[in-house]
Image (cartoon, rainbow, N blue to C red; front, side):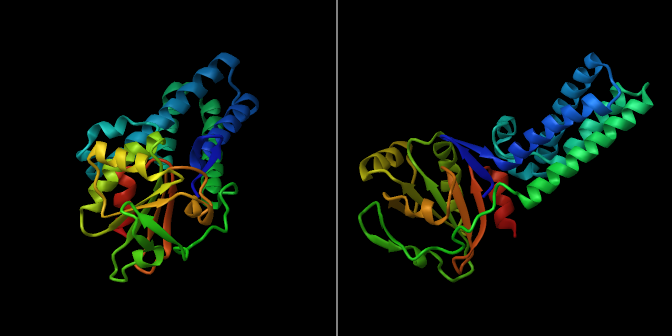
Length: 268
């Protein structure tokens, strides 16, 4: 899974690793940069800002088609969507400009930036905090839809090469509510089946919320005992799974979805 839970808050693992690496960068700069305390603080603050801004702009540029229909989504900085390599280039560029008259210091901070990026890349690839033996196929569970009809989860995989997106959500969860219109839009495309599974709530608040928002899904299920959260070892809500036509889990995402994420999933 790509996140861990700290109380009710989901923390993206790549962002947690980035925070750890930023702290190590600060510590390394203190002992290795050969900069005065004032110059070091100024460089570190500027480099981090340049890295984040460049990473965000790079991601948006590489997924321009996903942001073209909703340009303001690029400003939703809490959502996933940062390109680490482009961020590194931004931080190196900032360092080159601010330390252009101090070549020795520039070379030292460049080494620190490359080392920090390498560590972050290794952490995101091997994800020591994200290992899991969670379910990799749809479990043999039957849930009720909003009309009270039983639906076997195994039947969701139609076997006609149509992928299935399974979204675990709740009405009390703000990011769940924010991503609902996007999931409804993708469910109407015809090339993917979207299944929303409410976790732990009674029927009435679920129906009231969907009706009040004018949301319509072909398959909306209830999981009052939160069995899917247990089966897939989800750290919190929302959690979204991409399954192939055989019911095999291909992708997992904990936290709010973006159009770019869904487009990337369905492009493969």
